Image (cartoon, rainbow, N blue to C red; front, side):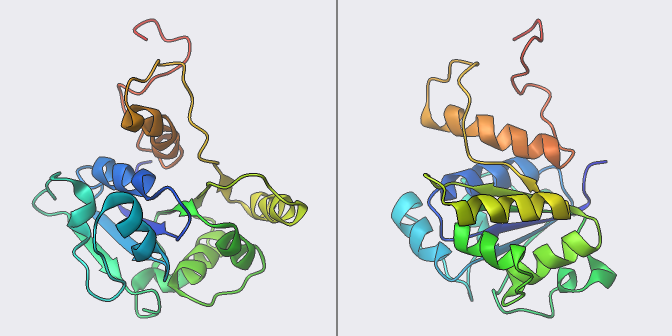
Length: 204
């Protein structure tokens, strides 16, 4: 089932363009989209995308690159310490959560059950309430600590979806490369695009 309420968390790992492309895909299709930035995320977004954002005061539509928010849909930014956010409680959990990109430090805190900010708390809620949690790490190489954290979260019910692009579709632009990862994310939260590349499909 496609989500009615989706939370997208953006950490300070490199790869903020993945988050922007994902938002551009989900905002027209998901009635309620929440966004949370880690403390370092605004700095990385400014460096990689040239956008000046803030954890406290930010218009998240800056990440949409002109994609409109449909009437009746909402796109809202929540502060990193906003424990009044609905999805900070299991009584009002979001339908699905995506952390993209996700730093290994953030993964470690979630795997350890450390709810020290809204992102880790919301992820903890998703796990305990058996909601979809998709984590998109983008870092290499991996230490044994990283791999054990990935195993812990997989055993707890999360989907670890590394930002590893595919090239079956012969992409001609950087965004086309990145969309191969975004399409995998969309598929895992019930929002697969009809025109996404699928191996073995005749029209591909």
